[in-house]
Length: 250
Ligand code: PEP
Image (cartoon, rainbow, N blue to C red; front, top):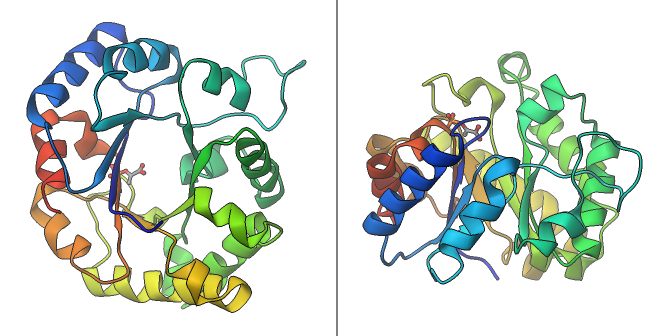
């Protein structure tokens, strides 16, 4: 079902003590919300974060990444069933940093999506164009291909566990944000891309988040656009007050 979602991607930030501090600040600030609220601490702190929030009905603890294999000789990796076993039911896949620094291709991401869905996990699937793609006017082609290559082997019903996150790479961590109009145009294109393959009933049900330098000062305007269902927040999710203000933009 299409929902408003605000998810904080903490990336490789916050040790255990810092994780506990930030969670207790968030618990204090975010008592209710008109959006689903998620935080993605680093893997070593997921268990503690889950334990601290398991009776909290507002904030869900999610993972930043996982491997596609169920288990085996993949040193340093974690699997979907490992995440499930500590209470984590949602995973971010395809973040541009994973694509750029860890060579995650569309093929690898398709396998990861399959593994997550096979374990009844929800996926926040990220994609977005580079600055050079946008300058060349190729942003829709790039985004359309990222979606098709990693997701179009899925069955229509799989989309109940898929959340899409459009994150133009040029806007991530740069302080540069897509304008609300640029975000809306791309989100409408993304919804149409899903509709062309699966029909509007499915497409209208999918939540499409925007990510890229969302801050308290711009969240409301971006979230007001009809095809923007929420945000994936990096830097601003590391500050409880800023994250709270973004959640409150709904
Ligand atoms: C992100 O990394 O997903 C992100 C959107 O980062 P930032 O908000 O810092 O641009």
